Amino acid sequence: MIGYLLTDSRIREARELLIDSGLEFDPNFDIFLGYFEAGKLIAVGARHKNVLKMVAVVSEHRDTGIFAEMISALVKDAFQAGYEHTFVFTKPEYSQSFQYLNFRPLAKTDDVAVLEYGYCIQDYLNKWKSIVRTGENSGIVMNCNPFTFGHRYLIETAAARSENVYVFVVEEDSSLIPFRVRLELVKKGTQDLGNVHILSTGPYAVSRITFPSYFLKDSEKVTQQQLKLDLSIFCGQIAPAFGIKKRFAGQEPVCRLTAIYNEAMKQTLPGYGIEFVEIERKTAGGRIISASSVREMLLGGETEKLREMVPEATYKYLTENTGVLASKNATPVLNS
Image 1 (cartoon, rainbow, N blue to C red):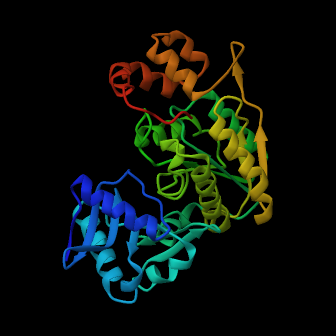
Image 2: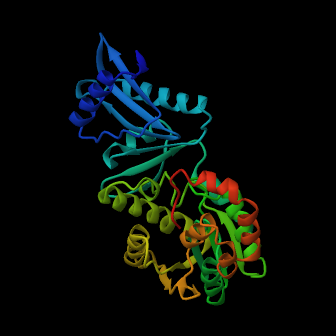
Image 3: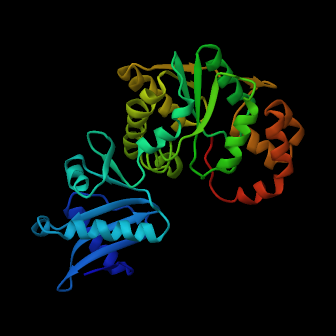
């Protein structure tokens, strides 16, 4: 029977089972399930939000239906928690087992495969078909926490060098500024640029699904795997759908992780026939314009200095919501 693992001793049993199966234990989960037979733990599986992970079955039971039962229980639990779209990370050699259970392959590296159930990336791409244009197109992925003149400079530079520019605003809500606000501020800040199209990334770029270490600051090895997955999805599926031949990004002299990401793009994109274009960061008052600097100024009460860093719509939002944003700043936020 399947039940929730709630005690420290049960979690330790699950951890041992995972290690024996060649998998790592991840303490970041919402629920942990175990399959018991005659009181013995023979299979486990966990869920964090809509990501299934740490699924393992002891070797002598792998040819039974226990694996399918465990996945079914996890998907059902996710659905009851409000998630109709689920993902799973596994080893590439186990990918087929999930495909038999109607999971679709999304991306993989030599070490990791990610599959999805329910809504899929083709649904996401179909959603944006109406804004796809032919031509020499470029792409930019931005968080815009908040939207600054630096972001604006990068977009208008790309717009001058491209027939169409697709700006993908990170949908993951792990930032100081909520996604819906970030998206609206980008739209308002670029509405005069006729060849720029603003859209959301969904869960398919720099999200907890494709790039959890960007938010969680995991080990460098995990970071490298997530970088590969993120770029595999963008280059292999998103870029072809939008005819993207260039990807623009700003230089990153401050955030080490973003600098690593830029370097990965520099090495990876040409292999897919995509040019990586790195633009020198815009400055104001002798300092680089960055979202992190803007947040520091705002929370430090330096509101007048913001005027040379952000467009009017962003300035208005920040100054009208300073109190709310200051209270949210007690929790970790994405620094870009």
